[in-house]
Length: 265
Image 1 (cartoon, rainbow, N blue to C red):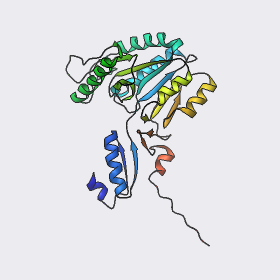
Image 2 (image 1 turned 90 degrees about the horizontal axis):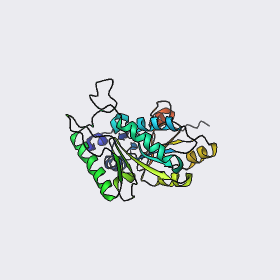
Image 3 (image 1 turned 180 degrees about the vertical axis):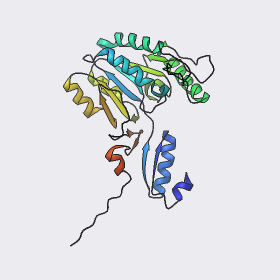
Image 4 (image 1 turned 60 degrees about the horizontal axis):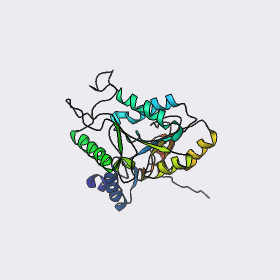
């Protein structure tokens, strides 16, 4: 990294990676007065309010959690659901997670494949076990699968305590945390109560609720009634420890442009 940043031909740097990697690139670029764009971790909330189309929300929630086998920075990790619909959401969500077709990623019928490395499975399982020991309730899964490859069982946790990894850490694998909330105020508070702020998905058909989510969720990207996605037409990036700067869209192009002011009298 230092060799690249030391090269006078390199005038800026961009990184997609972990917090620690981002900090190192940030320090290195700052030392050399070079611009940087950092896209780091995420613990994206997926909020479901009573007015939402529940079946569509559940289906999309599972898709959003297992994106790239759960190894995507913008995969939904924390599912924040209004009390009045939480029982039904939980039942349907768990059923869909348990029904996922697990297998060879080259098989078109496979819905959930392996994690990238054996270490990823070990780390994920350790965080799940710590969360359960701290008081989280395991609804399904919670263990590596006994088959060739780095597979982890689709896992759902609820009653997640704040001092457990499942509350706000970035779980890179098919592990979901469900939080029940009494109203929108509590939903927003829990969504924002982590150090990350990459994406957020909120499901509601009440206009006033939509406006509050758009304005009050601490995230670089807020999607309403849709899962968070990367699209080259729109800016991509986060706030807080999820990084700064933007990729994609016209904003992303301008991140690595220097404006020259010319005034001719």
